[in-house]
Length: 172
Image (cartoon, rainbow, N blue to C red; front, top):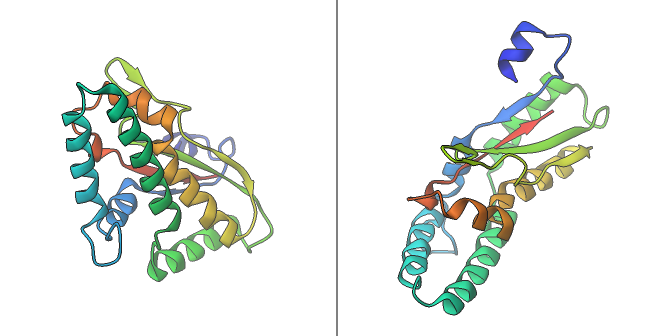
């Protein structure tokens, strides 16, 4: 979209990208107060999943619990005041005064287009979000969407290191 916007500025809507790195930084926060980082927790959970491969019922139960836990964490983790301030300023510069526009909050991941796999459309898009706090809530919903059961199961067969699934956000 950036290239299209560059060459055809009148034909492509204004937008902002929140890069994969922001999600990766979130994963450095503890999964629970005083606990290990969410990233380390993800690594540990995937190791357990692999050990349960011969026990499909137990593995499925474990996966269900895992997906609920990581989604809950993503929906409730605080991205921090610096992120919020930076995003608010960027939205003001790009879209204008708050409340004068609505944005689509869309996702992309680093693993949506792999050999033999395309994940386009697996993750959530939230249409016409108005107001900064609503955008923040939509961002967290979209960041959690790669851990929906459908998206998770769809890409698992193609991932050797699934803890390295990183979401980015596009606001348009």
